[in-house]
Image 1: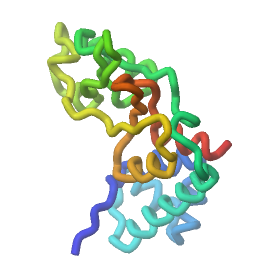
Image 2: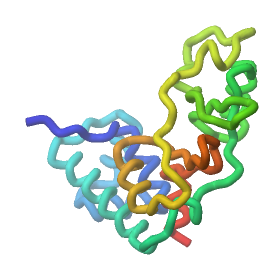
Image 3: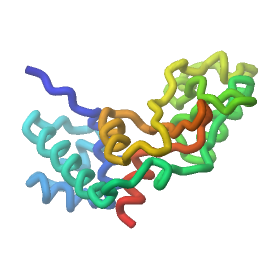
Image 4: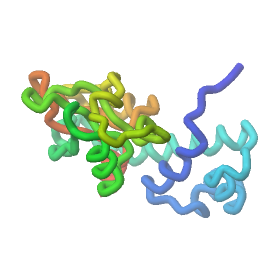
Length: 190
């Protein structure tokens, strides 16, 4: 029987989003802080048992962080100013935006209608010659998962737990907002 864990590299990002130190997470999982640091750096491989402890504890902490949402709707927590690119934009522009704003993936939207058409990510750009190319030439056709404005936040949380990085909020086919894991956890802490 195999388990489908998120990547080990996600541990540090999730821990930081929760506002936990390495020492705090290590204590909650009954492991050493130095071993956790090595695991986060990728220089140590945890046993199955320790990986289960880490991801179970992160899930538990995230669950506690979002319980305060109750019946909130997506529109109540979404970020309205979504950073996007269009298919005609230059790939260099997309890369610059990602670097300047510390964003790993951007929605690609139709310039006229605002409808999502795909995405472009750091992964898409890595190792590729992008000079002179458009976003359309490099973008992934898979669009982020999307929900309506009135979707309960609990549904958004379940989508984000499936290793998605963001959920788009759509109204009449147009992108009107975005909710990322980081946004969700940050708002839960306030």
